[in-house]
Length: 329
Image: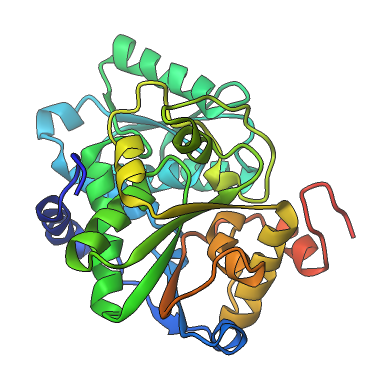
């Protein structure tokens, strides 16, 4: 185990958030299982109440704040799903929430955050620009920052998904986890490997601007230009002063795989055919990696489907054959 969030913290988070989240289904994928000759299970975390795994970490972080801190309000930067989760968690405790977003965040995600009563601030063309607005809110307004990934309470909350995976699939040999800032990957890997050290945990991201993948390859956090991608939830940097998730991902991930836009699109189509659900690109990268032959499964493989907050018009275009944001069949 690397320095960082441990199994005890994840179990404490699980007890704390249990009344506020759903235990999401795990279902066999008969198509991938038949094609690959190994059992493949889909963990349908996109059926979480706010449509993404982010509710776990945001809820744990908000519930962990003392009342006197919470009274000043909470602020975060987000590519969409974390902001929605934090707005939901803050509203449940009667706290003010400010969510800072870049202009790359899809309109449906912005609207969902506003619908939960949060104040939305749209700043710049990257999550780094949104983070600068967060710093201003902390410095000028005294608000409490809940980062989207690089925070122990957030990582511990995401790690509760790893507890569910081992509990539901005790024979699992490989876990495919969407990789962005590393909160989900670090938390899941910490939980799974603490309970089943031999399980492989593989991070899956996109070829267009995968900051954690580039940082792991370089051996230190690096900045990449954010680019439009079907996996918009995986965009954004990891922070030059990353304190937690970079080290945990470096210690705990067995591999990192990057997908083209066409491979992500095929993952989206596959998930709809198998589950009947419209999932976002970030949620489809695990299925996309298996379909593209970029991960060779050994034993039972579990694919985390992380979110369903995709614009309906974009999903319709992909189902009609679009293979990128630029395609318009």
